[in-house]
Image 1 (cartoon, rainbow, N blue to C red):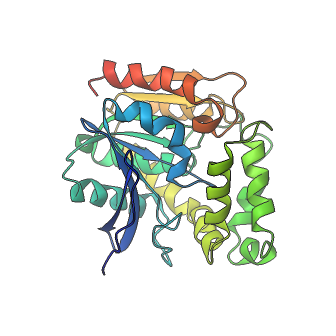
Image 2 (cartoon, rainbow, N blue to C red):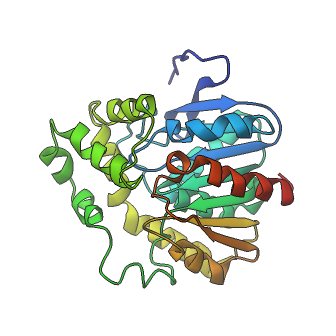
Image 3 (cartoon, helix red, strand yellow):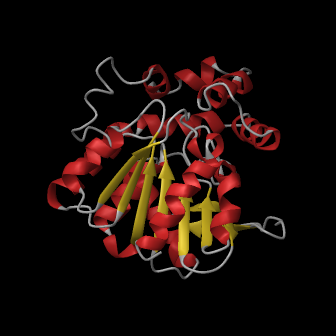
Length: 289
């Protein structure tokens, strides 16, 4: 497989990296210890647009489009946490980075946690946000009324992408508005997200994450049953997840700090980027990053 190079800006270089049978689109900036940024749905690496600059003053920032998202290969399968963690390990290998701090949100969080559980030598620090870790105990209060409505809608094979055909932009817009509590996001990032999810097969790839949730949950359960999370970990919540992720991590994590950002929507890196940096930069510095 051959990866066609992509153009880059003076601050951020976009590379095409072959890993685990796919071609990943990866944004890279800065120099120093590696920090990986993993986005969720409905995002691309542009989720971190307000974060990359400040981080890259101290670190080598590596922000991939996850499998099936953005400009990364829309694979037919492999959307479980184990395969995605293998994708990430391959990116680090290609960039000659034996280990990295990993910052993840939403769908990127199970990937980061599973990699840290299975390969603690590869994850120096872990920052995770606004996600649930499968069926691990601790999220019962959050799930008392059932999971968010779109989990079931996205999980039915072939349904959501068919129903939403021609309405993709309006659908993604709902998540962007709700995820910032109505405040919205910067116009250029908004348009980049809309464009990414109106491309052919984009929604099928994105919804494959939801269809793989039972497999990912089992992978997390199996890993947590035999290992503890020894990596220094910061769990950050907002609306709607709050401290549910911290509660799931608490029984299996040796070194855990939790924080909930007030009046902040789910899309923390775009809704409250300065508050996020205020938490993340000292954490990375204090834990050796």
